[in-house]
Length: 63
Image 1 (tube, rainbow, N blue to C red):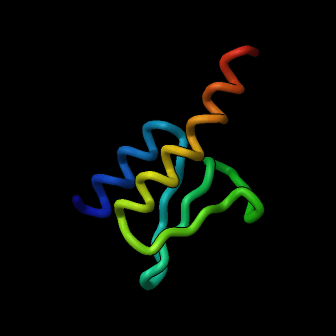
Image 2 (tube, rainbow, N blue to C red):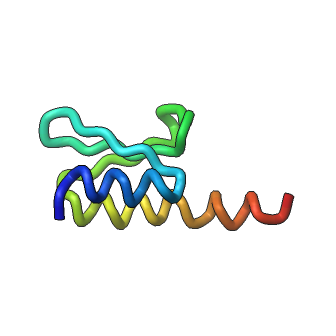
């Protein structure tokens, strides 16, 4: 699993992923710091990103 693969996978479900040093930051497109999540490895980042996308995608479908 490569960083770029995980980033593109999460991007397709509305989650932005970036990396600074060993810390991976995840958030919604345009999300503020209070909605950001942090991970230390790609497996954890993928899981957190999917969690972020889940409730937001479900909540927006009713509009």
